[in-house]
Image (cartoon, rainbow, N blue to C red; front, side):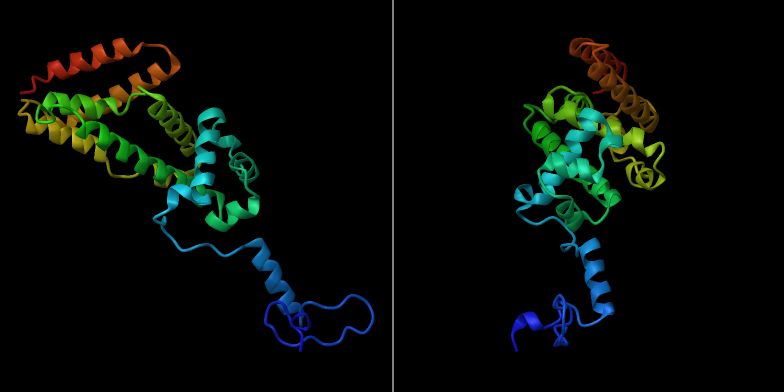
Length: 239
């Protein structure tokens, strides 16, 4: 029997249609199943592949970043994301399933990218044994000192604004852990500063984050921000 005379879903033989259009499903159940498959296409396996930077997943995620940085996440509809990425909405749904999952994936990928770049920059410092040099470099990763960090800060700001009204996103974006503050506190404590390292770390991270936003808006210059950061590091009397 020829293949086109079998149901497209279960592959059972089709009954003769008599007059009219030839049937493609053997029952209403198979027709409904085919409809559900079109509306909810199967997702690929979880986790990025070794070739992630070259995949469409990456292409779609970078479209989210561009929209967030330029127009805010309120404009990041599935249709707009697909158009920016140069793919169909079906491709976006295939790889991510839902808008929430796409936004979370894009945020986590941006965190990974930033951590990798920050590690590379810090490891390239001439003297990472100096606690003040290392602490200063760690804090400067919060500042928009180049195009990559400027764009990332705009995206993170868009996510923060969205998290104020999106509880599901807030649960991911605003976690209970504070890895950056913990790192800064550890560096202060390792330098032997006679201060409460945790409180100082909270103040430094929050302060430098605010200075970064001022720098992004053009309210302060890079030189002004660096002088302020150095002033507070000098106040810590790091060894």
